Image (cartoon, rainbow, N blue to C red; front, side):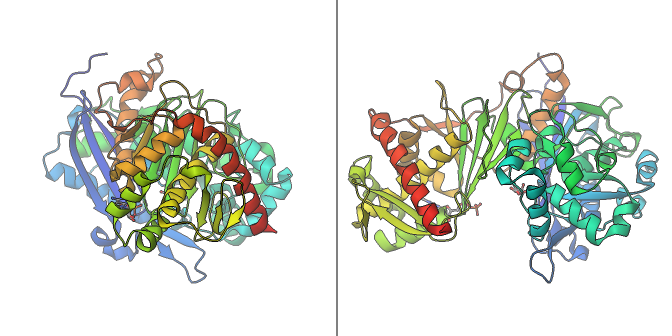
Length: 532
Ligand code: ADP
Ligand code: XUL
């Protein structure tokens, strides 16, 4: 599948704070990138961090027109910089997950008859029934979540269908709230899109399907049949399917770019639009995760992505359809107590120095002589428990550890938790499994060594500043050949790889095998104490 080097693929990412784009050539090298920052480049929308936080502190929205104007701006910027759109064979992209867009009756007509002499923003002024789109930071739908869970028999039952229990930010619950409190606007709506499918619609000049992977973040889709779940739809809004239409595979070619882009920017007539997806699925593609791999982002909070073959949804974490392989799944798990907790312990036990923190890690043997610590300074997400808890090798509660033991207990505890929760969701370590580490703490080799030992797998580091965007460009390229059976891994084989950082210490599995079991039991106990 040799692609001429002068052909080009674009990936867009409509994220919370900015719109980004990358261009790659046929050899998968990045040739161009650009971005539009919502707060500073579009100050007229008066957003902070790309959003408006409403008075109740729970409702969080973004102006849908800001996203349209950002697309006008970024394409204009590329054109002015001399970017040659005539080589673009396909484009795709991603959007922040869960956010929703409400197209007013008649908007489809507007999309189909765009005048290349004008910008999108001015032509789509009247096209949205709801001007302020709810986004993933919104947490105002607790009532709607409770209704949905009780309608299907409980949180675990909802997770068994949709891959997640009810979450305030998930789109179905947001739609239910709009139907309830903005009934007129809901009734004026002819189509509801996710941020991702909204963005694809702009390029397509018609409504774009929601893809399976981002569709999994709605609490509406049966992730196993990949159809809207009737019980969930009924409990959300009657006849909702008319406004959503059927979801499609994330690898689907939705059509060619609309004549608007051909005439205004010089895109070729056969430039394809591949389904857009959520930013987290987009990142999985950008990082080129493969079966059995786990990606661990060690930032302010810690996030884990997993490639799973046989998922077992639970009330913790999320299972989404896999964006690059329709026979697989991905899981997403978020932890609130990440770098901030590591920093607190570093300050208390290593005089504020990462050097000292690393020295302490190296000075205590792996397995910490059986001592285990659970450090939830803030109420944790996975699991919803709080407090600092220390246990000795007999499982007895202890008040303090020495400084060195405390540091190792923290790091081992954080990674044991990641493996325990990953396995609960159905994750299996297989021969060839890689751990891909990203985020601030991935620059620390001693922390990565613990990660490698706990997972008994090599750890690679990867720069992911643009992973969702890059994933969009990779998916655009793969979309053109997916139907003929070429796998994503094969299509992006030539892309720059991750760097091997550390390999597991001999004997680590024998030590961490029993510790994993003990950690899981102790965490259960802590969770019971928190929830009473
Ligand atoms: P964000 O999630 O905000 O993007 P980053 O991925 O940039 O965060 O990570 C920032 C964190 O990285 C800091 O809070 C800091 O605790 C951590 N960090 C930076 N250097 C090191 C180091 N050498 N060892 C461990 N942690 C580090
Ligand atoms: C994932 C989530 C966020 C957004 C951020 O469930 O809500 O990561 O996708 O853009």
